[in-house]
Image 1 (cartoon, rainbow, N blue to C red):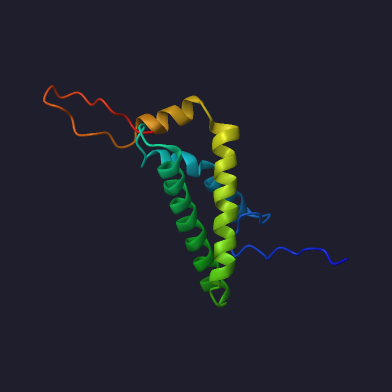
Image 2 (cartoon, rainbow, N blue to C red):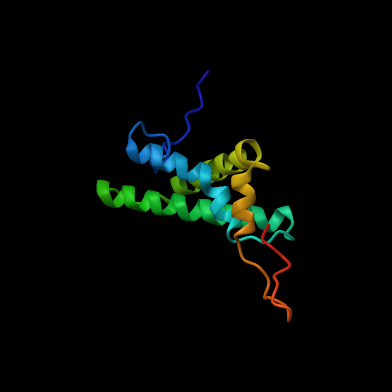
Length: 127
């Protein structure tokens, strides 16, 4: 029986070197970065889309830089796979490592807020 071979990630995500460690750390921290762009009142769907968009940007930029540095062709299918992996790790980090921590709450509180009402106080912090 043939074993299933997953395609190689076109990023440094699991590479045993400094860029690999930095890539993994950034992926784990993506939920905190995403929280800066969310509102507290949003449901899980829009929050997930923001996180997915950031994972896509990260994976695309890493793959593009890797292709340019190696002089290789850019492979969009592999980038799609990398986006799924990055998004999965970010979601796991959000629900497993960062959920209800002070770091997460600080990121949520520092995100966008609604315009201040006449009294000058903001009433709707992010996420």
